[in-house]
Length: 74
Image (cartoon, rainbow, N blue to C red; front, side, top):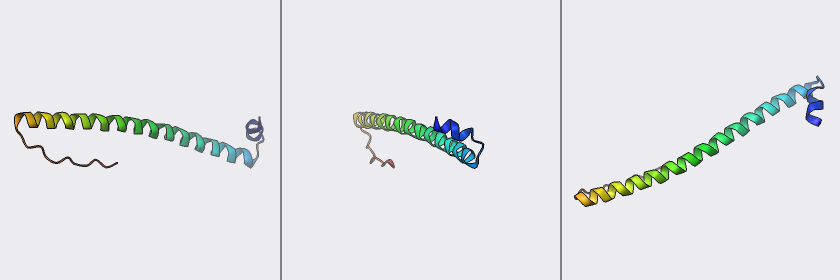
């Protein structure tokens, strides 16, 4: 395998490749975390919309004025 040969070469290329691989690995890990956080945020926004709807229904039932909905930054 090319990667193995370069890493075992003991040259400056091995060092550069090692650092690049570590950087790419960290980037892939962070990208996975971001995707998971985006998924969780989507779920939370859906739940928030449900709570707001239920809150408005309860307020309407008891005759309390429903304030204008605040926007959520996207």
